[in-house]
Amino acid sequence: MGIEPLPGSGHFFVRALDCAGVPVSGLSGTWGNLDLDSGEVGSSGTNVRYFDDGDPDQDATETGNDGLFAVYNLSDGVDLDYMVWGSPQDEDHCLRTGDGDLVVDLYNASRCLLLTRRLAAVGDALGIVELRPGPPAECQ
Image (cartoon, rainbow, N blue to C red):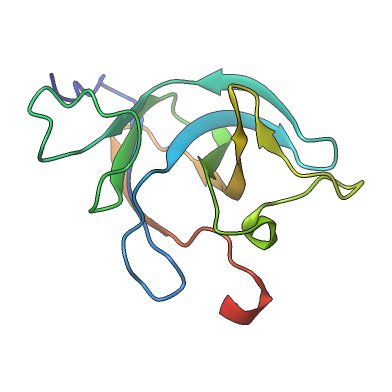
């Protein structure tokens, strides 16, 4: 089961890397509208596909050793926040609300929001994105 692009929709192929440029496994993503001040996530989408050579049915639920995934079939002209979730080495890698609270995954409290990036979908176009989750101050 692969990705079936819909005419007029936008797509992003993404590679998640750490501070040293090494692909990151074990990440998941959602997209929608994020209010980072409060940590509220709205209109979350599920058109995310992870790639894993060891899973021929491509039913992976997080990034594999290559850090690759795709966000696909987004409406033309839609601006959205792509949110990357994972279990960091320490809380310094997690994003925080305006009040300083960790932004945690509603479905798995051991996972926090590592990175968010605003993406604008363009119909019938493919974007290539490199994401570097975190990073703490020493990685910037």
